[in-house]
Amino acid sequence: MGKRKVVLYGEEEVGRLIHVVREESRTTSLLVAEIFGKRHDHVLRDIEKLECSDGFRLLNFGESSYLNEQNKTQPMYEMTRDGFSFLAMGFTGKKAAAWKEKYIYCFNRMEQEIRRLADADRITRRIEGKVVRRELTDAIAALEEYARRQNPEHSSAYYVKFSNAVNKSLFILEQGKMAKNFRDLLDGIQLLHVGSAESIIIKVIHDEMAKETDYHTIYFLAKDKVNAFGEEIGQTPPGNHKALRPSPIALEA
Image (cartoon, rainbow, N blue to C red; front, side, top):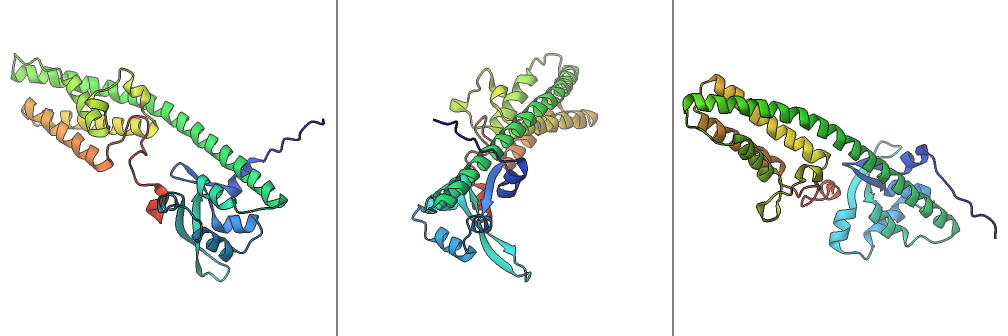
């Protein structure tokens, strides 16, 4: 038996077939029509006739548009990897099989790159987060000293209180508790949100101490601002900033 030939495709081919929207790899009905040698209106028809659930369609096919050669707006679909796979099941023949294999490779390659960039971003956010936490520690130490000047009997552990306020405002926690390695679970976007919330606390502490605000009030002002920030961006489970949010492709539909 002879050696099996392994076909690899270059980065240019991956970039031509697949694009990324909000960290998700996609292709379009227009490109699928071109690659598989089909009329675009027939591909649109095939998508609209797919016997899939409404939920699957909403998650994996989004209505979009493009400008044709006459500069007129024409309809097309954006589709995810799963959407493409479902559609391409109906494409038969040797040539179609070769293009399906190429598409699958390119989707895989693009998703590997998305994960690589996400990991790199997470490392960057961890480093940035350590800088912000040092600043937060210094700000809280200043607040503790400020509080003791106003009340010599003050003994509140503000660092723990502020950390709990940040985590409870940003994350969906099982039974309201945090794991010991909590920060290790967070992805890059979540670490960015934590850093933003901690920066809010730092600013409130410094601004309000400059105004000689009562130390109790400073704590509650900072906590309220962090809660407002959490409400604005929405809570997510640790490690998945996209969970429990509408699908990006559904938002564009």
